[in-house]
Amino acid sequence: MTLEKDAELKARAEKVIPNGMYGHEWVGLLMPGTPQFFSRAKGAYLWDVDDNRYVDFMCAYGPQLLGYGHPEVDAAYIDQLQKMDVGTGPTAHIVELAEKWVSMVDHADWAMFCKNGTDATTMALMAARAYRDKKKILIANGAYHGASNWCTPFPHGVTDEDRAHFISYTYNDVESLEAAVAEAGDDLAGIFASPFKHDVFTPQELPDPAYAKRARELCDEKDALLIVDEIRAGLRIARDASWSLIGVKPDLTSWGKSLANGHPISALLGSEKAKEAAGKIYVTGSFWFAGAAMAASLVTLKLVEETDYLERMISMGDRLRDGLDEIAKRRSIEISQSGPSQMPLIMFPDGKGGYDMDIGYKFCTGLLGRGVYFHPWHNMFISAAMTDADIDLTVQAADDTLAELLQVSAA
Image (cartoon, rainbow, N blue to C red; front, side):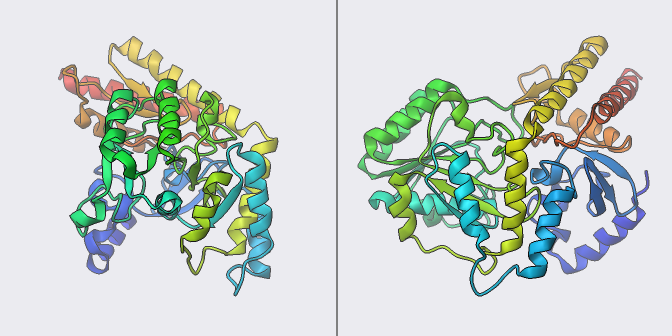
């Protein structure tokens, strides 16, 4: 595998882009030997600028749900783009899309649309504070809710005042949640929760129903709003909101990434109780009302309702998990696989209660050389476009890579 063109572009980018790249695409966050630039994508596959092909288990960090370049979704986008995309006002699709979301998501009585996940979580934050004019917001330790000043994981450019009214708690820990609510007192505006714990560098945790239900009860007791951040997990856990599987209805849910299978749109959905508060806040964007992504989203949601996309993703995820478990047993190596199988996080325990990131990086680098794009510390995503053959190729690549690493270790 050669990356000559990629290296040239990295050198050029370093001169004209701070750090050569930024955000989650920052060069410093990439594994050594990882391509930065890509030229095309189709189905479950991604090609870098040097024309190396990968089975892509990052799915563009989540937006690719049904497969890159899905013909029906993209046709709807192009058709609307040729008619009107960004205009002086929205197209009729905004009403149609809001109606569709309200019909699909049990807790939702209304919808607002934006472009990025951070847009949607920030709207949720503002609506929660506008609901009863309260300030305190509870956020789980280590949770990621976007890249604005109130939630970015990096402190540069952020002041203490930006986060003056946030209180931390431990995900799935009822006692910790209750203590945070007590600290907020009568000024509690809302509780943020992820559908499941998907923090980086640590195993994922499914939600404890007792924790989720207690969060609902505490919000009801304090007349605050329960916010579930579906940006990463939305449409990958359920066709409804993720916590519908454990019988808990949030007041607000923020959605993004996969809503239009890669086309730029995100959403805030809410219950009738939160509707007046959502109407008070002023949020907008020049491109938020664009019609093409809404047309693509309508087709995506149609396919979500009418196809077995979710069951296919779960099946492919289970096949991968079983394959890696078999390798671990046969080669006597411990592999940690956590979270829902369709959103796997794969790491290597170090035998001391932590995780060996050196092996994780080498494992993922070895997979890259064999045509598989994995991530060593961020959850990955299964695409509905993946096939049994893609998973089998991945399992074989993993076996070959681990055999190579064990051989080097033994030497």
